[in-house]
Amino acid sequence: MTIQSVLGQKFAEWDECLNGSDPENLDTNSVSHVLYALYFDLCAYEAYAAVRRRSAPDNPLAAPMFDYLVGSGYVQKQVVRIRRLCEALPAIRPDGRDNSIYSLRRIVDDMRRLRSERVLTSDNIYAVYAAQAHGGEISRTALDRLCDAQGLLHKRITDELSKKVLPDRSTELRAIYDYSNKMVVHSSSQSSRQALGRDLGLTLAQVNKVIGDLTEAFYLCHRFVCLADHSPMVALGWELSFQDLGDGDLEIVREVYSRIEQQSEEHKAQAYQVLGLW
Image (cartoon, rainbow, N blue to C red; front, side, top):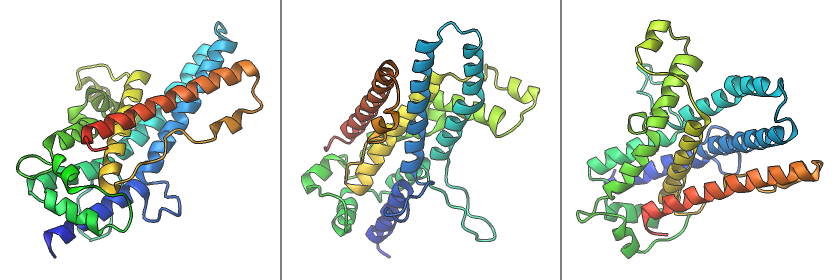
């Protein structure tokens, strides 16, 4: 096989990671769907929290009960989803059974390796784009701007992606990994927890920062791989779900969803700015 055909196979694998093997049928393990789930719960949680603050700001029961629900439910679900998006491709099993996964980390690791092997060149990328039966178009001049003077994909692109999906490159993501390893997927001993040398507490701000970083990584990868835009993260038509809310609560919920939708669009714009093409 030629280098360009090998790279074409990689682009097809990345497309499947992002969108599933059959775009006509929803794949709940695809990167896009896991990210949608992150945003669905993010919007629902923040809307509920805002309404609760309005309706019972001083209720002695509401606050501790709500804090418990956050600690035991919402945060842990989001942490697990974040881990799914940032997991590396497992090593091939000795028995040959397929244990491949969908994740952003898998794509970023591939891109870094192929760049170091001088496969992600302007000529090879252009050949893959030309052979794609879907997606948009890109001029050769624009593609050349995506690459450095040696014709390789700019290192700044893989560096930016690495800062979003590698726990050793992100303080917030490292905190999420430590929390999930010690407190969620394993019942770590006291000595194991103490060995970290720091508090294992996790804040909503840290979780939201990582969700934003992963949003940027997704939009950057999707645009690069598919040459196409992607729909907003916040579900379209969400207002139809809240028609029975009172005017006061509806105003609060609408503000929350609109704010989060705007933030996700800002992450998309930032991702496209890193590519410097669109």
